[in-house]
Length: 269
Image (cartoon, rainbow, N blue to C red; front, side, top):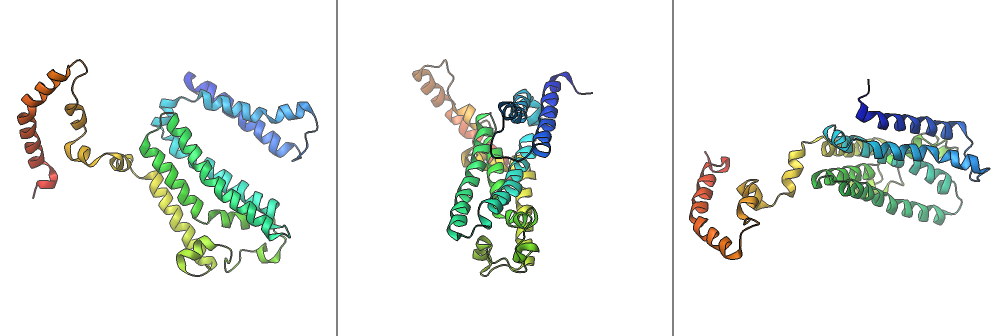
């Protein structure tokens, strides 16, 4: 039984999936709009999905770690299906090599912007700086992994004999060539992909405290989480009172800091 607070989200999410399936699998993939009603119906999946996102319980999503669970697969859907299709239909079969080169470069520039847009949306919604870094760097590793090259060979219906099966040498994969010094063989490309996917998974699945430690200042790490709060004067204090309070408490603070430093794990043994 779905809890009442999640019911609205579940309803809109289900309707979005159903409507998207009807549009994608049941309607022709035409460029031209044949009628106003058909145009409006094709907008239904977007509207339902937008309402589902708006109805999502944010606190529950944070507890379930949904940003790290849902955002990377959403990016991969774009990167491993739609990008290979764009390359296949938009330039790979073109007789003009300049046309495909321009298309490739624009998509190459667009993809990091999409990663940053997802990270920005998460941050503006109240996401932590640590998770922003995890999402950004993890998805960048997936982008650089070579997964898209493999997807281009597998999700498209190639008629060119050179790509009907996965080539033994990936001459076009220059982003791998610059790392290993020569065009990668198929096995080398697979290893390159696996290594990057493992690194990305480590970024997504590693403990949050590791990333939170990276954003704390060295002084905060040395003095503990309460150092900033204890050093700040009270809001109601006057400047004179604040100075007096600091000067009268300075020896005590110094002794406390010395005792804390002596008892820290780094100074034992």
